[in-house]
Image 1 (cartoon, rainbow, N blue to C red):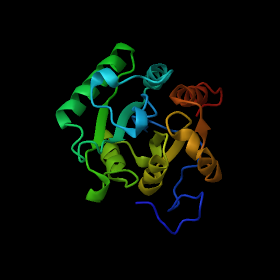
Image 2: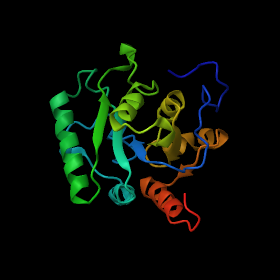
Image 3: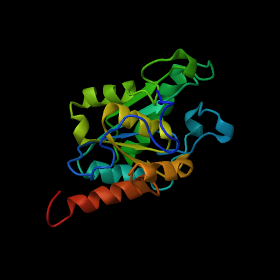
Image 4: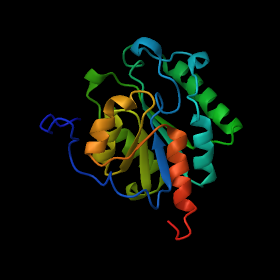
Length: 209
């Protein structure tokens, strides 16, 4: 959970979020606002027909896949806990997402979600680190070789708590948290494709990663 004692504009417990993006083998992406457009009026995407990819998201995923990185999705889906979305409907949405990514040569390795409402006080709803820790354990790749890509302060807090590096994208809610990210030495990118391009430039360096 967020530490209420942290100064304004600062994240809680320290973690290596500001280190250079070297030796990354696993990326964990938030879903809404990073891969797809958020539902209007702060609602929930309840049907696969309402899942719309953000510009450049599929190209970004394909580039990450081309770098040989494992790709996981970690998303809060409290609509289930609030009784506004069924797990069957969520699975159908994710099946569509995975299929369309596969068709774009951007295959996704695993999708993890927290179904709980905020008042459940679970350990998997971001900013708690449970979902991130589960994704890391499933991948079998150390936290130090993992990168979180998110658009929300919750994603950055979860990264901190899990001891994982993070970057912020300006899509979704990201523009609201850019100053906080910069104050905490967290890199900010326009979108997922820009993150993937940055990682590609790292791999293409004549001096190596």
